[in-house]
Image (cartoon, rainbow, N blue to C red; front, side, top):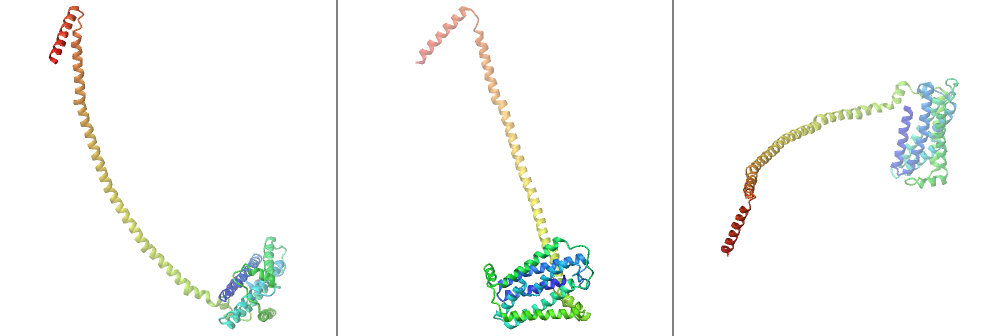
Length: 359
C-alpha cells in the first residue's frame, strides 16, 4: 500500500503537469482513469492482505491462490503502466502531448513526463509480479468472495471501457462535456511511450528471472532509504510538521491564557457592573414604590376619616333632624276635630299674611 500511495502521488504529479500546460481536459480524463485503475489495485491489495495476512511484497506471489483476482488486478497494473489501448494509457498520452505542446520548457517537460511514464510502468510491473506472480503458496481450497470479485470486475471493466477514447469519435463526444480541448495526438510521442514501457517490461523480466525483482539489485544501504522515500517524510516531519505543531501549541496557549483570559475578565467586569447597577436600581425603585404606597395609604386614611367625621356625620344629622321633624309632626295627629280646625284656621291666617305681605 505504501508503493501504491507513492504511485498515487506520481499520478497527481502528471495531473498537475496537465493543468500547468493548459490541458484541463486531459487532466480530467486522467483523473477518472486513475480513479478506476487505482481503486482496482487497492481493492486487490485488500484481497491479498485478507488472504496472506501481510502485504510484505517478499511473502506474497498469490497468482495461484487468487487466480481471478490476479487476472483482474493485471488490468489495473497494465492501466497504471499506460499500456494501450487501456484508458490510463490514453490519458497519459494526452498529458504527454500537452507537455510537448506547451510553449515553456517544451523538451524538458515532455522528457519529464516520459520518464514518469517509464517509472510508472516499471513499478507497476514490479508490484504486480511480486504480489500476484507465480511461485507463491499452493492454491487454496476456499474460493474468492463473489462480492469482491464482482467489484474487481466492475473496476477492471471501467478501465477497459475508457480505452474507447482511443477512437476519435468517442474522444470528440467526450470533449463536449469537458473543460477545454484534448491536445492533438503525436505518433512519434506514442512510439516513445511504448518504447519506454517495453524497456520497463524488459527490466522487470530480467530482475524476475534473476531473482532480484524484490531488491532490484540494490544493496540494503541504498534500498532501505529508497523504500522510505529517500527520507523525505522524515525531513518533512522535522522541517514542516513538528514546527507547525509546536507553533499551533503556542497559539493554543496564547489563546487560552491571552485571548480567552481577556474575554473572561471582560465578562467578569460586565457581570460585576451589572450586579452593582441592578442593586442600585432595585433600591431606588423599591424606595419610590414604598413612598408611593405610604402616600396612598395616608391619603386613603385621611379620606376615610373625612368620610367618617364629615359626610357620615352630616348624613346622620340630617337623618336625626328628619326623625325629630317626623316625631313633632306626629304630635299634631291627635284625632280631635277641634285641633284640626285650629290648625286649618292658623294655616289660612299664615297664607293670607304671606299673600298680603308678599306683594
